[in-house]
Amino acid sequence: MAYKDILSAPFVTEMRDTCANMYRLGWDERNGGNISYLLDEKQVGEYLDLDRVVREIPFMGVNASAFDAKALAGKIFIVTGTGKYFKNVHGDPENNLGIVRIKKDGKAAELLWGYKDGGRFTSEFPAHMMSHMARLNVDPENRVVMHSHPTHLLAMNYVHELDEKKLTHTLWEMCTECIVVFPDGVGVLPWMLCGTDDIGIATADKMKDFRVVVWALHGVYGAGKNMDECFGLIETVEKAAQIYMLTSHMKRINTITDEDMLKLVDLFKVKCRTDFLNLK
Ligand code: 2HA
Ligand code: ZN
Image (cartoon, rainbow, N blue to C red; front, top):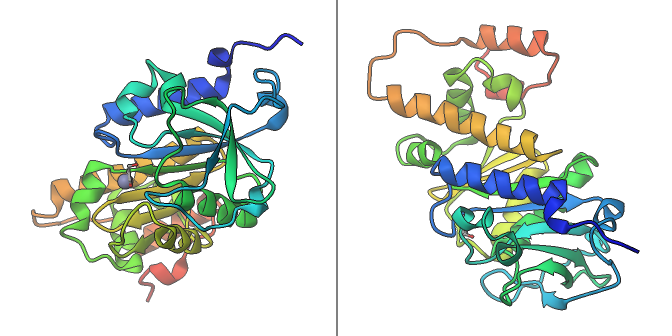
């Protein structure tokens, strides 16, 4: 069978374009940030021989990892590589990205393409896979998990209380569309060591309730049905944080009220965390 050129696959193009975009926005300096994208096996089979495994990669964070991804056995992901720079993904996808299939025992993955220089998936692989499992339980259509260091959101972490209700409410006040884009609010984890199973477990636990999770003083995790939805979610949170950082040191004389937010929720027919509002 003749395979199509993997570099022409839409999912490779999406990864290249998204990494370039996030780098250009200044959210992913150096090797900051990582993306994992659950692919359709049939679609991947148009580009790659699914019986040809390049090598096996044991699950790793920064160190060996003990988490079990049996629930994802057989699933294929395209994932950014550890130590790789978003800046370089567009020009050199085969070294900076990998396409991997989760093994039956849920303890390792088979490399089908990429990581050409001997590399492996992101050090945040445990957090990504555990987040996929958590989101797929809530929304079977979830495909993308994204981690990034958006500048204004990170800045806001230093000057705003990191309480889920208070942070969400402030963000909802900053742009009219916020409550419609993330009606489920923003989850918050305290500062934790990254690249570990522990932060993966904690992130996945938050992902049961939230599609956006702030890692205090580090960055953010987002989840979505496709690349645009997931990127748009983080982009909207970051925009709200930017407005906050542009205005928080000035006297605020206008605001979007909770009553306005309820009107938006009603008009766009979304279900919001009403316990995050301050209704009279
Ligand atoms: O992979 O962003 O959290 C680099 C990071 C770790
Ligand atoms: Zn990070």
